[in-house]
Image (cartoon, rainbow over all chains, first blue to last red; front, side, top):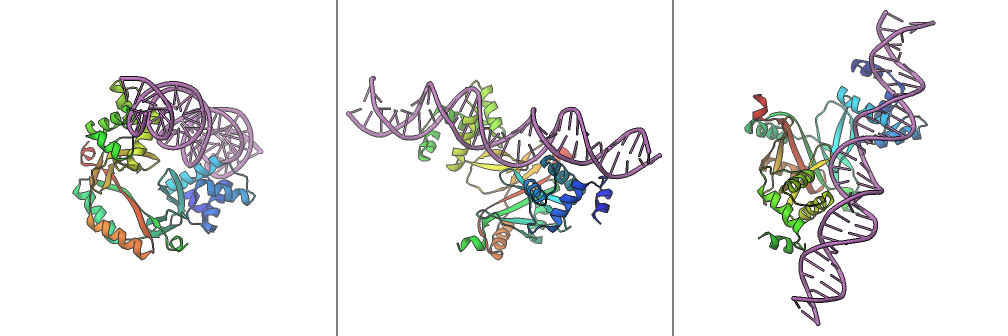
Length: 137
Length: 137
DNA sequence: ATATATATGAAAACCTTTCTCATTTACACC
DNA sequence: GGTGTAAATGAGAAAGGTTTTCATATATAT
């Protein structure tokens, strides 16, 4: 199934690409850094280079298969793209990431861009805080 | 005037600190990276180390004299703090940065954090786009 | 089966930022 | 005004995440 997605994106179907996809599809952690993916593959007994993981994830991003979150402090995490636009809440204690969708904010952003004469291409919104779990511990 | 601000923040009044403040107060570019500040000082004929610029800016941030924006892709820019909370619009062509304030968004963010059980500590919102000037060129 | 363009792995390079440590400086006190 | 001491500085090394290089290996078109 995924081979098709790769071909559609103009990418050859290679073992490293299939393996990275497999990790992203089967992990419990929807948000993973390149290093996380790399380690997960090593643990599965796969031989892969970290540079390849970075390359593959970047290509997947270009192909729209994953999106990249640039977490504050210069390290990126990736999530499988599911077509739904959403923003993120991050717990500053345990690094948990939750997602949310808010039409009011989306609309205001477009309005602000228009007011300022910007042709909006993208936006990023992160809410930082302490999650419920971390508050009670 | 500024010496007072430094003393209030528990920082000794040193030449590097005064010079960095001076740059931030007199530049045409409200948003500057550590490197920008460093280069501006070198051009003024000041001798200063890049590490010192980083240290000073970080201390200023702690003292509430400047705020740090973490632009997408792990490199920071600083702006003189003026007490007003605002978010940013960034031109992806010319890197111009504009500011905006929107109470509707602020309110929705707080509501979302509450809904999700997060005790909100901070947030970051960037709208990316093509500015008016770059659209017509 | 083969040619060729593309992908891979390992290590080196990169870039921004922080740290180390020997030297210098600001400020409190005499 | 000197002087002691804690804090600040500069230069370079180190860190951390990511990208590049380049020789080798592999997928796909023919």
